[in-house]
Image (cartoon, rainbow, N blue to C red):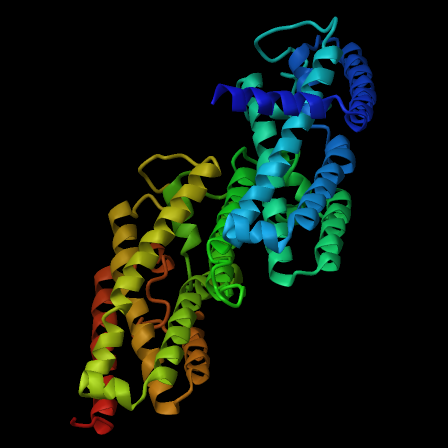
Amino acid sequence: MNSIFKSKITGLLDEAFKFRWIIFGVILYVFGSRSKEQLYYFSNETKHLINQWDLINNMVGNIYLIIYVILPILLFRSLSILLEDFEYTVLIRVGSYRRWIYRTLAQLLQTFTVIAIIWGLVILIMLISVPSSVEWSSFSELNQSLSESQIMEKYIGSPVLAVLFHSFLLLQSVIVIHLFLAILYVVTKKKFIVTFTAILIWLYGAASFRLLPDSAYLFDISNYLVLHWGVSSFGNLWGPFFVGFGALFLLILIISRIDLRKPSLKIVSFNWVYIAFSSIILIVLWFETRTKTAVTIWDQFLINFFGGSQNGYNLKAFLSYFIIYFGFIFLIQLSLQKELNNTGYYKLLRFQSVNKWFWNWFKKIPIYVTLYLIILVLVSLVISVFSGLSLSHQITLNKTTSINEVVYQFFINGFLQLLFYAVFTFIIAWLSKETFYSFIATSILSIFMFPGLNNNLIIPSGLNSMSYILDDHSIYKISIVLSIWLLLGIMVTLYFLNKNDIDL
């Protein structure tokens, strides 16, 4: 075991001292020298001393170095590995596309390690004659943005952690990019497509941090490659990591569906609808945190699920509600469409009646609704924590509103509202034999969320909105209204099913 480890270390060191990496080291030294000169210039201008952490953070967070040197080198290496290693003899030996993708990732990480070693050696050379300390320098603590360290000091108390976070963010992004290119190549088997995509990623990265407006920070690649750039755009430390981790999770999920063992060597089709919906929900909940009006995580929870109100119209809140709740119903509609398309005489023989078939389908809906609501509340609270909101157990937006009321409105009335939407969807789909019409019907139903159209809250549309708590509406009255409509919906459903029922 020790011999294998030693051989790997020896191999990495041998690779590090090849001529091409010596050239790379020279390039790093040129960037470092200019950075050092610039830091000393600002230090003299501000009359505050720098230390080694200023130079280290400048070197590991130099956006021009990373975008114009590090990124293209890693993209080129990623392409080389993918194009050279993709052979059927290799695929047969490793046993699956999934293992092959992770095999190529391991090779790329070896290159990343070599780059890190050379980077570290150059930094050590640059630190000669630079004052040392275990804390941030007085220059870093200035309330300015003349250097990377001055930005990072505002978000991280330890300069050592700042360097580690810098490195981890870059590593995370490199892994995400490589896995994306690997999946693309496995799916398309086209060298031109994956090469063009890699070039496009680099060009977009080179242009995004210069051309994109501040409001489009989510789409700026540099925010996920350079930490100080990301924390400045997101306004907190965890934003870039959260988005990167989400992308990595989705890619790993996709890779888990790729299997070479199929006789045809074809990829198992991905359920892109669910992946896209999950991504949209994350984006919607994250964008809600940009309002800057919340103080605690429960304030943000109210904002996230504000929904419609009879006292005023908020387009952003309405769209968020529509995506979060009607989007979920759309997924149920897709499930219902599949169920209706696959329902034939053999299924009726199995269940003996249409009623039994319906209850077999419907009994799963409450479970799905409950799980969805739990996931929503967890994701919302986690994002709020990462956004730096207080964990205080209170609601500052409305002192008279209790957290118990918020939880009741979200879970109980949310559960009843989504169940009604599901029953309503089934009725329309059953009568029209087309789930598209049920989507149109639920969209029309959402109109009653607009001000003045449902003042007495008797129309079951958006009644689980958090706005009704702030408007002093009784959450228990809402529960009664939703329960009545849900029972009526089930009765209407059974009526139409009984008209078409058969006795086998």
